[in-house]
Image 1 (cartoon, rainbow, N blue to C red):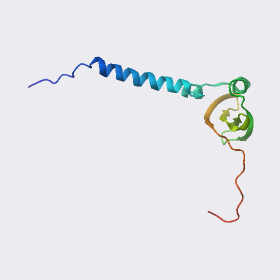
Image 2: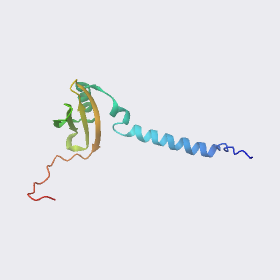
Image 3: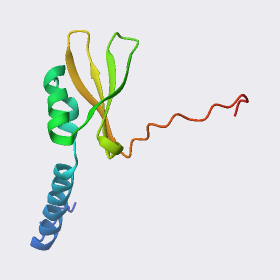
Image 4: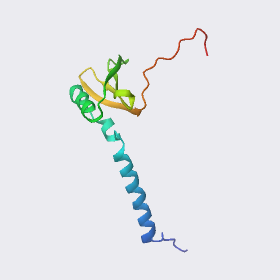
Length: 114
């Protein structure tokens, strides 16, 4: 029986792999809000302050979810960036979505179903 051994990675393949990993890391670091930040819980007042200071985002709309949490949309002037936040009944907030090009216009009302 012959044994198959994995060939050692060549320096060139290792360099390509490390370049891809580094590119992915840098790409995520350049995003306005990383996945780690989306999972972070903090008091609402601190999150509101951070969104204002970093992105000039201010509350635009809000509503309550079925679990009693407050869902808010924050947007920068002109809607360049936006953030969706959920605040628990205990006052802890978490970023649940982010994006660009927020449009405040309401859809036109139609009397027929689409």
